[in-house]
Image (cartoon, one colour):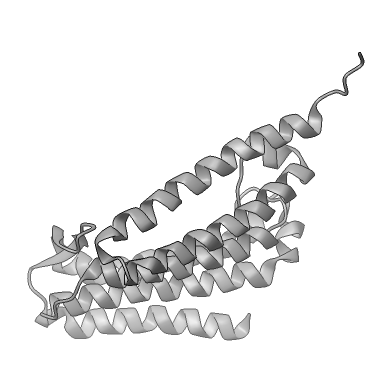
Length: 216
């Protein structure tokens, strides 16, 4: 975990250094949001364009540090802590990557933002699959439905299949390299369908686990 802390703190520190150094060079209004075609459809002030992501990174880091301390099932988090710590590092790298793309665009470089973003999201989805399939029952991390939280077996079965589905969703996202015009669909459809399916799955699995045997 010590190495992870060094990486995380290094990324956040570098973000602030970049923000301070480039502040005079940035336009008063910075591009901050792109649609699925990679075109700018939102702007933000220079200060928030440069400092929002580093501040968000700090906020998320404190949240990630807090979760294992306040979860009533904190001992279960320790059982998959290395995967959770890996997720924290990956999330910070992902946010920094998005931050750099935003900075480079506002410095005048032009590229298809969607095409560069979606493979990164694919990596994030794939690792979420790894985290999910190793997650033990807790109140903050994983597929937390009333049915998974109420039954250990339902949690384990839902997370086993959930991990596989998130990995598949991550691999599907990489198809945007070959089908750039369908980038939005390749990321949005799995991102919607997988959680929806897992909610339904956990409900029916709970019903199966807790139903009374037929007496007749």
